[in-house]
Amino acid sequence: MYSPTSQPWPADETLGRNLEARGVSRRDFLEFCGSLCTVLGLGSSFVPRVAQALQAVRRPSVIWLQLQECTGCVESVIRTSEPTIGNLVLDLVSLDYQHTLMAAAGHQAEAALQTAMKDNAGKYLLIVTGSVPLADDGIYLTIGGRTAKSILEEAARGAAAVIAVGACAHWGSVQAARPNPTGAVGVSDVIKDKPVVNIAGCPPISDVVTATVVHFLTFGRMPATDSEGRPLFAYGARIHDQCSRRANFDAGQFVTTFDDEAARKGWCLYHVGCKGPATFSPCPIFQWNGGTSWPIGAGHPCLGCTEPHFWDTMTPFYDRLPDVGGFGVERTADIIGAALAVGATAGVAAHALATGIHQARLRRLPVVEITPIKPDVPTTPGTGKD
Ligand code: SF4
Ligand code: SF4
Ligand code: F3S
Image (cartoon, rainbow, N blue to C red; front, top):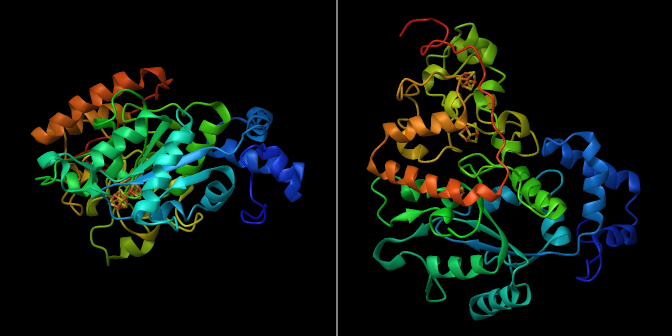
């Protein structure tokens, strides 16, 4: 493909014109669009439409807020494989504010944020990583003397769309784990007047962020989501149903300690804590670091990091999946999410309420039904006994 830094993309030029000027062939461009359609779960018949829409895109403005978080999500996103976030940041979008990646600092950086919001009012894409601390009037995170809540509310007001990247921005992640001393919540708990798409995971797979941004640029709207606001093209299927160790699960072949013969043979990790049966994520398909590997592929159980409140509901991580509310392992994300919420504490119940509000806010986005997979298998897999 093309080099992201070889030629700047002027704001008044379309992407198609810019790629042409770089010498990108029509074949390469269509290949690029084809790979995006594959990631987005669109048929090949969509390729011409995606190509036509992308060609007409003018350089969009992106404002990226980093709130209460560990920078792991930024690290993950800048490691996108193909198309790279380098392509996105430097070519497809104009990243007008990102305080870790930008050269400016202090007052200059904050001035850049204000300018970007003013110049692109109503048109910019807002990406947020990190949670919002609400306890004690939000004093646990201030930038330029302002609380995270105040900065987020202002930035969201003028945004065309909001993407919350990572578990922290989705629901608060580790900061929101009991007892949640800073009162950390996700973006959608603060922004209630427009849809927030959640790219779940701690951190999420960068290609999902890229594909979501491109979906917005191509179709002018966010992709269809589940009740958690997660794009269905990525989070519509459980890890368990895509796992390379599923045949071992079905055959009752389990690892019982990390150094046993079953572990060496690559058998199922359910008995050493795998939360794959209750986790919706594209990890087995997209994988990490350009498709190199993923946790279960490397012999580690899934911790359920794309599910809300996994620090409370999925722990202890190396114990078997708790038998929550009697759900079978063959259920949809929404049913499992509801069961987990019922089985958890008051904090999680509060989140369930927030999820209801979130669902109402997302009603403008098309929601695709997930068909339950049948038949159910016994609660204790492979044995038929508890
Ligand atoms: Fe770090 Fe995880 Fe939060 Fe991302 S979601 S910023 S990796 S703690
Ligand atoms: Fe894979 Fe985990 Fe399911 Fe076993 S329990 S098949 S390791 S997802
Ligand atoms: Fe997270 Fe499980 Fe994937 S822990 S990275 S959802 S395999």
